[in-house]
Amino acid sequence: MPFAAQYAAALLVVGLVLFALYYGMRIMGRARLFRSDRRLVCVMESTPLHNNGALHVVRVADLYYLIGANAGGISTLAQLPAPHIEESLKSTKTGQSGLLSSQ
Image (cartoon, rainbow, N blue to C red; front, side, top):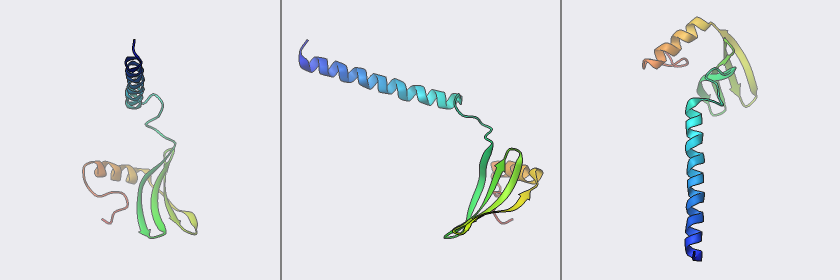
């Protein structure tokens, strides 16, 4: 077999292996084999206040916290009632305002 044909065949094999790896990882990602839908800590929503500050609603296990962050540090501002947050999340999915938007 001439050199050019061997080179083309090797290139084709490498391309097929890369495609198989890419496709396999996408399938695994969709199947959620390596990640969980229920993470222990999750930032539910964030909103900027100014250049160096923001408010975050954070879920830790089944508790919700309002966190303030700025250049000086991070502070827990309040623990939020879970029923209120869960109701707000349901309304957000139906296209209404988010957790931190003005009502």
